[in-house]
Image: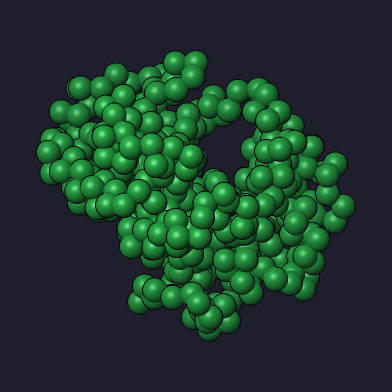
Length: 356
Ligand SMILES: [Zn+2]
């Protein structure tokens, strides 16, 4: 309400036709305003010992309190309390040491299944499927030439859902495998696919996958759902062949939309547990044995696909503000297993940050 009013006072109706998700990137001066607001929020929010924090929050049956998984810091800085349909609500804290954002209390790993009620995959079809596949295509393009030609390279899609990405991967010539925790999704995926195969369960439960030797592992909108990311990434690193890479698409905790809309941010969905940025995802990768990382800024699907209605000058401004703030709404990451991987795939427009 107040934010809408603020927008009207400052900008009149000039930007009303710009979609909500693009407005903060194109209105003059808004990036700086939102960044100042964010700094003020961080400066003013209290920081408390974990024990005090635990006393101040209710703990659900499937939940547990956590310290920061990235750096081990136990102190808590409560920042957000997003809510949504059917009455879900959770608390998001910031780690005062490394800036990691995470849900606290979080969901106990053994109760993760409780989040995914039946009917979860019913929305993964139709227009949603087309939009998803467009997003996969655009992200693969951003990391060209890694995905240009499969050439029988082994690819694992972790959290492969109904197989929308595996379908593209097999078309490009990858020897593609998937795993997913939903048996219904796996069944649906195997109907869709001709050569690629998906399995129900964890990678270590499936002999074809546990054998490892993967050239590429992909995590499409999966990272934010992992309750034990360090364990999972140690496993992924072990499954990669020399020269292998791992791709991540996840919501960006430095998004300008988060800074603008707070609790109302689109990244705070019911089943998201942790929120990464270019500041925190390197910690996860370094601690689990990866050699380096590269990022591809996310300008939004309609911008990148060229279907946006924004005029050229606003498109330029949007791109500039995404880059200056590192604030695209999604984060796209390519992680390199070793020096060989950096040598093979690290050239072109990508800037590789080495951990050594
Ligand atoms: Zn931390």
